[in-house]
Image (tube, rainbow, N blue to C red; front, side, top):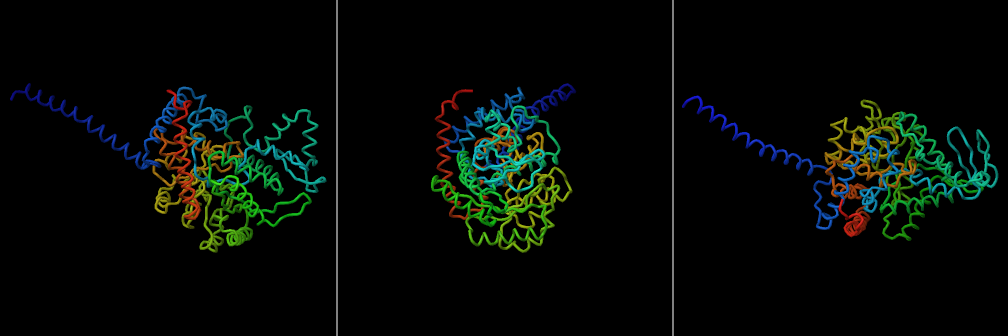
Length: 509
C-alpha cells in the first residue's frame, strides 16, 4: 500500500472520528445537564397538563425579563442594591405571577418587623401617642400625660406635631422614614459596612418596638400582620418573638408571658374571619448579647409557655448580629438543660467571614440538633457541615433580601442560595424583617431569589417545591400539616388556572 493510500485512509478515519465525537459529546453534555436539573430543588417535581401550560407562560415572561435586564441593566440590575430596583418589581409580569402563587408558610420572620411602614403610620394616629427624637431615631410612648421616661429632647404629642406641620401628608412621609431603612426615590443605594447597617437597623427596630409595646396597638398590629401575610398568599407563620411586658395607657404592665396570649387571641380571631388560615406558632428569642442568667430566664419562660399553650410555641432561638454577639458555645449549658424539651431553630452562619465564631456557630447548630438553621449564609465554606445538613435533613431558612440590606452580599447572583438550590439542599425561603425595608411579606423575596439567584432554567417546579418545603419543615403536627397541605393544593390548582386564564399574562411576548 503506497503512502498516498495510507494517508487517505488516515484522513478518512479522522473524518469518521470527528463525525462521531460531536454526537457523543452532545449526549454526554445533555446527560450532565439533566443530572443537574434532577438534583436541584424542584427537579423531581412532575407538572400536570395545566401546570405545564402555566409554566410555559411563566418561562416566556422570565426569559423576556431576564434578557431585557441583561441588555438594559437599569431595568433590573441584580448586582445593585435591592432598594435600587425595588420600585420596579411590581411592574414585572413574573412578579405578578409569583404574587398570586400560594407560598405555604413563612418560617423565619421577627414579630416586630413584619409590617409595612405605610400601615405603621396609620397606627401613629392612635390617641395619646408621644414622641421623643433621639440621635437619628425616635422613641414612642402612649400616655395621657407627658411621659416620665428620659428623653434627650422633649416629649411631644404626635397629633400636635402633625396638626401644626401645615402639611400632614408631608409630615407622615417624613415620620415614616423612622420605621424603614428604605427612604424612597432619593435613597442612596451605595452599600455600607455591616456595622453601620446594623446600627441603622437597630434604630428602626427601636422605633417600631416602642410603637407596638402598647397593648391596644399591639393587638391591631398583630391583626394587620396576619391580614398582610394572608393577602400575600401565606397560610401559616412561624415568627420569632422576644418576651417583654406590654403596657396600658395608665402605665400598668402585663407579665411578659401575656404577649403570647395576646398573639393567640388575635390569631384565633383572624382564623374565625379567614377559616383557611392555619395559624401562628412562636419561636421565643433571646438576644445573644445577654448573659447566661438572662438566657436561662428565657428558657424557663419558654418551658412554661409550651406547657400552657403547646400549639403556640415552636421552640427557642438566640438572635442578633452574630459577629458582635456571643457564640452558641457560650450558651451550651442552656441548650443541655433544654434539649429534651424544647426544639431549637438557631441563627447560624449569618456572616461573610470564615473561621470565626460566627460562621462556626453552624457547627454547634448541627450538633445541638437544630430543626432548622436561620440564614446559614456561610455554609458553602464548610463542605463537611453541608453534608451533615443534607444527611440530617436540617432545613435552611434563607432570606436573600435581608442578606443584601444587612450588607452580607452585594450581587444576589453570588448568594450561596444558588449553590443550595443546585445541590438540592432542604431550603425554605423567608423574609426575616420585611417591614424594616418596606418589602412585601415574602413575594419580593421569592421574586429576587427566582430571578436573581436561581438558574435561568429554573421554572415552576422550583417555586412549587419551595412552597412545599415551607410546609414540610414547619413545626406543625401531622394533623395540622395535612390540613395546610390540603389548603395549599386547592389554592395551587386555582392559581394555575388563574395564570392560564389571564389574557394579560398569556398574551404573546
